[in-house]
Image 1 (cartoon, one colour):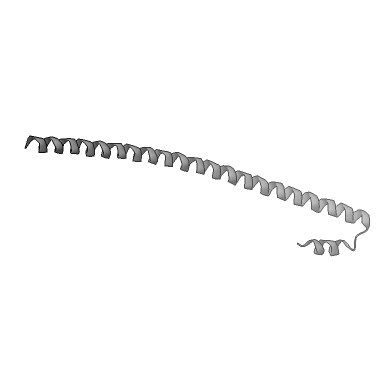
Image 2: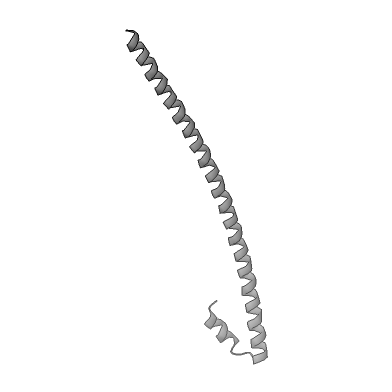
Length: 90
């Protein structure tokens, strides 16, 4: 409902009833906004929690990659050392 429609609908009321109607509409709108804000806040909390989980998972994956790099580096180092020893012995 547009504000203009509400104003035209209230034109037939006396000033006392018009004021009471305006207060009721204001109370209803405020109540609806509080409900909407509660839902929005809840969604933001959920999003923050999910982003925290994603960050934790990324750190876990990063740690696994770090471990793989170390293992691959050590294998290359040992392979190079072994190859050097084999070449030196020939």
